[in-house]
Length: 284
Image 1: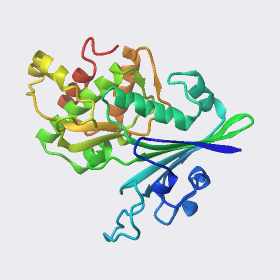
Image 2 (image 1 turned 60 degrees about the horizontal axis):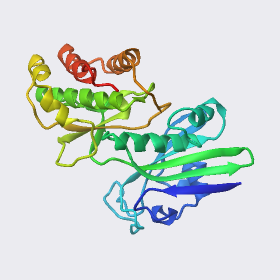
Image 3 (image 1 turned 90 degrees about the vertical axis):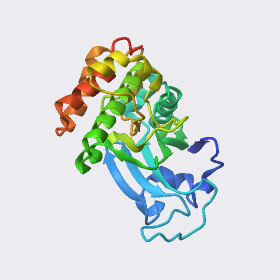
Image 4 (image 1 turned 135 degrees about the vertical axis):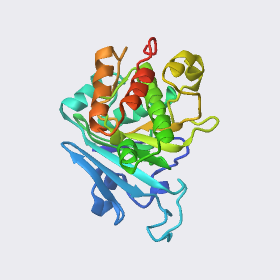
């Protein structure tokens, strides 16, 4: 068996991520990945871990080793088995991908190409045997300053910030639908919100400010004014795919799915998200 690697621009090789071999990354074993590696989630054929880049300060603010070339911060490792129906689906549906990790990589590329927020790509690895890919892994960099939507709702926001977040979410979902991206398992914990307003040239959001300028009547009907909004990004793209069109039934299903998982959302906030996410003509 052999392992092929692919790196995002600016990442030279695995050595810039630490002293771990490709097999250590492929194992997704916290004991092999170091004492600060944490298992985030596990399901049949998949594992998700979080671990620091070399030089990232610990909880006491101490730096235990120098950075290696990829900067500091936190990485997320997604490791997948190579076979099964999901792997077959990844090969036969858009974006056609050689493995589940490659599908995750390709979806992130598609999201970012359409101005949507997504994790920063770092590296992709595929273990190949006589029968094809037997296992794969994806490494992404954690987005700084972002909070999962469900945690943000639990922490509580003032009325103004809740309205701004609802607007940002509605516009991000509209961008998702316009890009033809279908995420059937999207949950509030997979939607990341950066509380600060989006800056000039910011690419960590699907805010579509140009559309906002053309939506004066819609904003007026919702009792809203134009304003700079929080950034929104989509992470952990389970079972995601790209369709010719995300139809009304799928859009309604996804919105209802998010709504059920956020019981504290007010009726007005729901109207804002629904109106902006499903504006007529927004979908391709």
